[in-house]
Image (cartoon, rainbow, N blue to C red):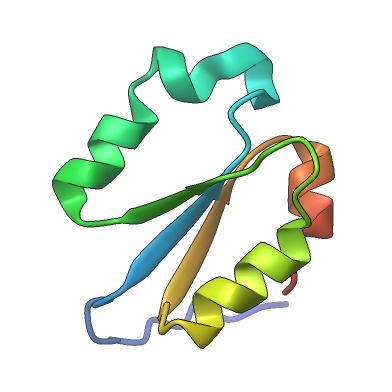
Length: 82
């Protein structure tokens, strides 16, 4: 059994979202994900057809990302480093 533990952590200062724009039949665009991120100060990295997700995540971390999110389908999420 996992205990319900809550930890207070400081607010992120450099959040990054890796986004697969084709996942979910283009839901990211239909729901305005780019604009929502921009209004909240979240940097977005849009995956291209030949991009390596792991490499993009590692680069974001090297550039100071203190939290990295992924908006994509099962394939994108499976490839994301944990």
